[in-house]
Image (cartoon, rainbow, N blue to C red; front, side, top):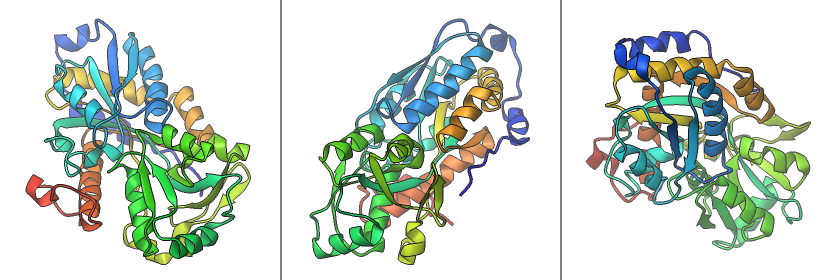
Length: 337
């Protein structure tokens, strides 16, 4: 599967969402900006935010300092810190699609529509094992799981994350049970796989890229409809091998950052202009191409609609898989169409 970039005219068209102009935009920013990343250092959300904001800093004329605030449920610690900050444009919230389940997982009391979104990139999830594993392919893994219920140790991001949902959908699709172990972020779960603390890890191709190409990880299958090419290797499609997985998969990633909805529109317009320029920059494009990301580059109405769809899909998927703590209907989260 080839990676694609989606910059096009959508970036410029979306600027109309933040079209108001006032003297406040001329003054912004007058000091450094903080990007509160809801997941741990070293993971995809963290790195994407660092690459994107470093490029944006050049256009805004100030530093954007990235700090990590992982923890809670579905990244709720970082979400809450960003939400509690003043709506003045000096606090961004670095997040991913996995944060949209915070409410149904009991992590916080808000819907995701309290933010406006800037979506940078996406990468598909992959099921991998360390290179010394007894599992040579996905069939070996599934055969073992069925013969040994609840014995296989599978690690991913925290409960309610995209990687957790992919794990649940995989387990449901093969009609088997495993021992799921949540970690505060993708980097931590991958380190656990390397050390032998867990047997299998489910994170994104981008996050596993170097480990797969170095031979430290053996990629068994992607959770996509087609095989994926990486470093001369072809990773088989898990959905092709097990069509029953298609009931809940594939589910796409969406990594970026957000600003509080109440932030003055002229400030959001300044950030949007810097974001649009950064998405076309050599730094972002090169990083995405070298690390198996698709650049999405959405903001304004389209980005908000994307996150609303993901909130609906993830919340109801978790509820149907009996993993959510709160009924999405009680939160007025609509069922996915």
